[in-house]
Amino acid sequence: MIAFRFGRSAEYFIGWYGPEAREAKAGNFLLWHAARAMRSQGCEGFDLGGYSSADGYGRFKQDMRGAEYRLIGERLAF
Image (cartoon, helix red, strand yellow):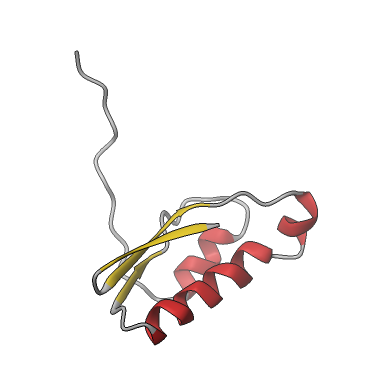
């Protein structure tokens, strides 16, 4: 898992978890501890990424009670 800090904000960037880690909800564990670490370092916000995952992470993120938002779709222009 990689998270970046920008001043008083932080953002979950990317993570990969194998089948055993997914079954053990390791992503939830790491996100929770990353959020706590960012708060202890003075961050006022931690963007966990999208809610739309079907593997349980979306529910975990919703339970964190953040403000939901949607981005417009990514596009490639020539």
